[in-house]
Length: 81
Image (tube, rainbow, N blue to C red; front, side):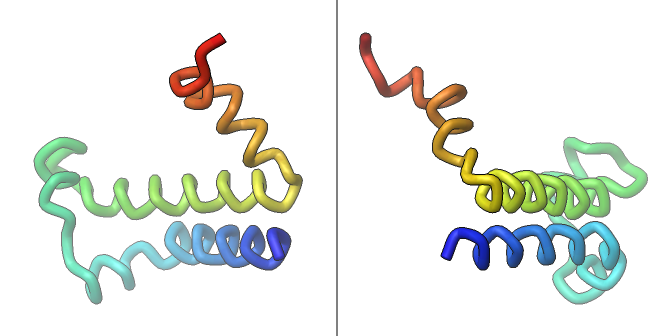
């Protein structure tokens, strides 16, 4: 099941990066991104960053490294040892 979900994440992330203009026209701008990521293309950059995050998560799922990544980064916040 994780292969299927990972491949879907990779495909959606790639689609976000390749078709940023389509997403911008159909879903509009992101107010936070326009205010904080620059005046020329803040929303475009945000859509591309969301795509990169999706691709990264997809590869973590396909390679079965998602849990290890979480434990190595944010997992240390919750585990006392």
